[in-house]
Length: 216
Image 1 (cartoon, rainbow, N blue to C red):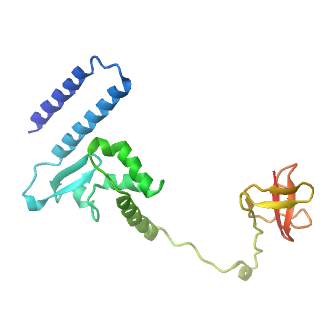
Image 2 (image 1 turned 180 degrees about the horizontal axis):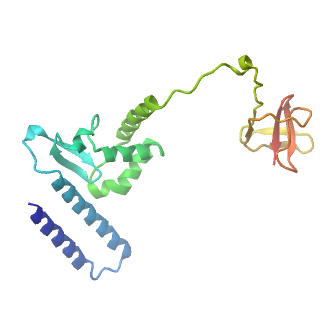
C-alpha cells in the first residue's frame, strides 16, 4: 500500500512538471504547486494514520489538510475533544482568534487555507475554540498576589498622571490645545502642583490642583 502511494505521488509530481513546462505566469506556477502540495500532503497524512477499522471505531476529523478519517484511538483524535478538529488546527484558530475579530479571522483562514483544502471554519467555531482555551489558560495562571493596601504599610501611594488621547485642554498662552496620550506612575515634584516637564520645551495645562497634562 505504501509503495503504491509513493508511486502515485511521484506520478502526480511528474505530471505537474509536465504541465508547467510552458507556464509563463509566475503566480499560476506557484499557486498550482501549493495546491498540489496540499493534495499530496493530505494523502500522505491520511496514509500515515494507518488502516481504517470498522465504521464504529473510526472518526472523521477536520485538520489543516482537510477532512480525514482515522481510528478513534489515534492521537490526533484523542487530543481533539471537545472539538471535531485536530489539535494543530485548534491552535491555528486560537492564534487568529486572539488577533482579529472572529468574523475577520474566519475570512483570513478561508483565504489562506480554506480554498486549498476545502475546509471552512466559521466565526462561531473560532469563538468557541478561543473561549475554551482562554478559560483553561485563565485557570492555569497563578492568582495575582494580594497584600495590605499602601496606607496599611505606611508606603506613600505613587501619583498617577494620565490623559485621554484627543482631549482638549485650555493652555495659558495658546488657548485650547489637543493633548497627547501618556501617563506617569512615579511621584514627580518640581512644580507648584507636583509635576515636572518630561522634556525641554514642553508646556503644561492645569486641569485640577494636582493634575497636569503636557502638550507637545
